[in-house]
Length: 335
Image 1 (spheres, rainbow, N blue to C red):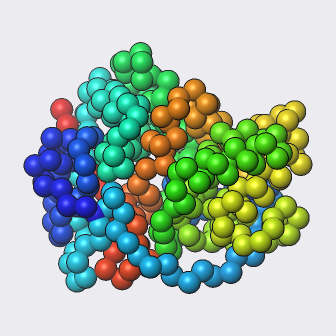
Image 2 (cartoon, one colour):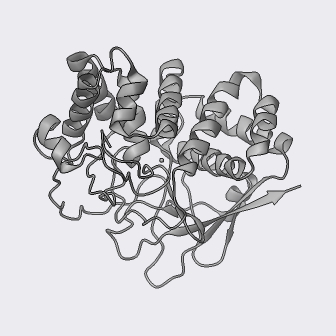
Image 3 (spheres, one colour):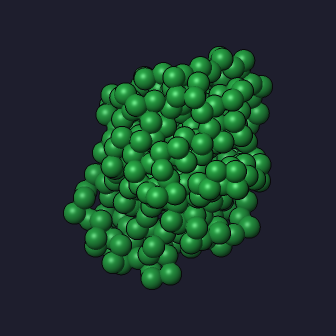
């Protein structure tokens, strides 16, 4: 992680305790026709039968470079704990979400700023998911200009958290994502070729693998940025399953074949047979169409993962560089 003084984290309600300093750069505040395993936004992939997979050759470990958002801790040091001081009631939590959503929606922010704001949104939404009765009250207290974005985050997070078993396997490796410009070009090219909306492809890419950052097969054997299983890839994929463009086009071809033009919901359900999954993808896709700044906000979201002991952040290089470890996340309500 890029170095950031603890005092700067403190201004955002983020405290650092124990081990090495957790740092962010810049200023400012998770299967096609496959299975029902929780998506990568909250776990390591899908599960269940229904295919979209492909044989993925095991990629050679890429050369690790620190991202603009996070750096690994020194080898031998204990991983830091990121403590998010969140509102202890819906009104305070709504204020924090309003601030974070406003900064995410400004456009033109640095990657570090976007990552920091997105982490706040992710953890706040997970706290709300743990207290379902708060959701309506939080949304009602959010400033009107940012209510739709926050409501989408809150509802999609609840869907995906509900799909995630607390003892699921962590992703094995976190690698750099393809550039945002290249991904957007691929989504739009796939839309032009198949008629499947680019926003759905982007939302699936986000949910399935955090835009390709999570480089791990699911428990059902799904692989690549769009999490295909081998039998489905054989029908819809071409080339290397790990190449984002190949995977995006394969997902578009699969959805088109499942009748996306008539019912995108049914096609998404064929991709992953869970209506919670369908709801989460559709909520993200709607936000992507409604707000041109939504895609960068999703793209720079850090990878977080739920273990039986709680949430951790997986920095770039995790599973690639031995010095890069999972960082525990602690949600600590404030009153």
